Length: 134
Image 1 (tube, helix red, strand yellow):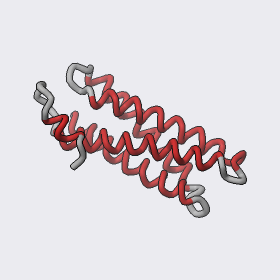
Image 2 (spheres, rainbow, N blue to C red; image 1 turned 30 degrees about the horizontal axis):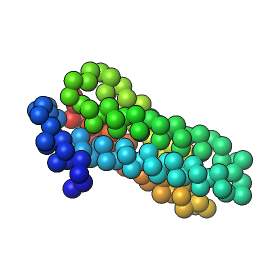
Image 3 (spheres, rainbow, N blue to C red; image 1 turned 180 degrees about the vertical axis):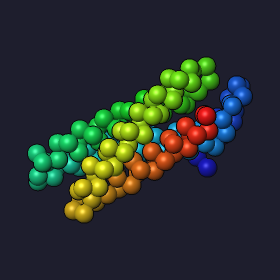
């Protein structure tokens, strides 16, 4: 258990969603944002960085979307559920696109393999959250 779940449990507003599902999504989003930023940074230092532009752009877009989504999901009390769903949906799309792009380079670049796996985990955690919100 990370620090996220006890923090959610301490919130004075009763959650209509299982705090474990929310915590898992927040943690996956936060991890994914950092991993995507690190992958983009590593891609920029590769010898063929000019051929990795699409990967770098998707890494950075995914990181930004994950950061924003984690912040909104962490403040679930009082936030319009449609807004939250829209962000989580967008995050699933960003994670899938990033995972697919990184997978194309995973055979030769370990950082892309790690990023592809993390973005898939994040997409799965977001889908679990969307299911819990239904």
